[in-house]
Amino acid sequence: MNAEMFEELLAIRHKRWLTPNEQARLDQWLTAHPADRERWRTEAALANALGRLPAPAASSNFMARVWQEIGAAERTGQVPPRRGWQGWLRWPSLAQQFAALALVIGLLALVLQGRRGRAPTQLARSVEQVATLAGAPSVTLLRDFEAIRRLNSVSADVELLAALEGDR
Image (tube, rainbow, N blue to C red; front, side, top):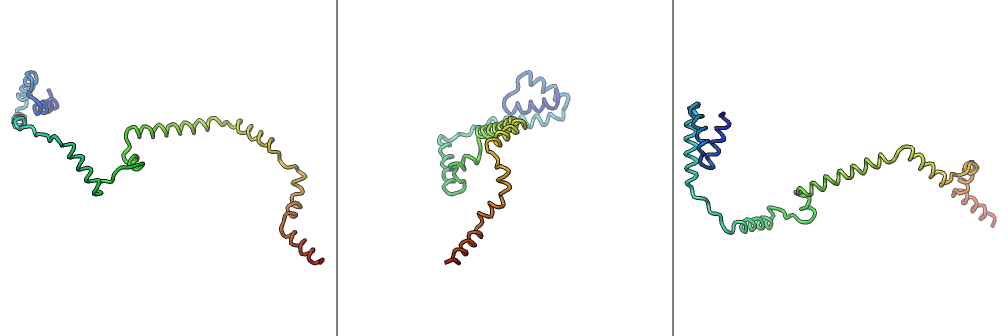
């Protein structure tokens, strides 16, 4: 037997009487360690005294009184009521924590799958297909771009109007 077993016997004695086997082990320990004898006597006397105390009677309306106290505390503003989404987020339950974890794992899997799905060759093919469908402007149109841009400018129209008004 070691000191840990002696501590276990002390704890057992607070709950119930020792069995003959446990009592025999305790006697062996106390013979080998006489310094612990006084501690055992004190603990046993305490356990006996606690065992003689009458059990406290629980009130029949204990839970009703507890709920009344909680309601009174909420009405006075000491404890804010948990309503709507704020109450749902305040103290997440185990199910809410599990749902949040599952959502994060699902989103992570979706992002990783999306990145893996788009290989560089697939991306190049899709760009090529879009480029052929869009039809780039011809080279001649790009050469005449400056002339077209000048035709669309507002200043040319103002000059034309001034010239026309001068002919009247």
